[in-house]
Length: 91
Image (cartoon, rainbow, N blue to C red; front, side, top):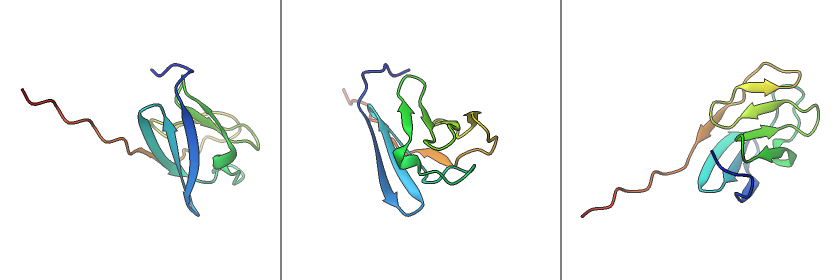
């Protein structure tokens, strides 16, 4: 699990998609919260728990599964990890 000192960034990559970076991991997700269409690019990312929280009504979503974990919605977020695995060293 990443610690809270991991660098975090969120950027809009398409009208309907955002990219979230937490340390070495990268995720692509819906840009709008399924609850009331809050802009997740302006949300809060918890690096330790790998969650993003909508700035409007505080619905929180797992970056690993998309599951709604807090707030007024139970509708999941469409999320996928896009981190490329490091190649195995060759001896």
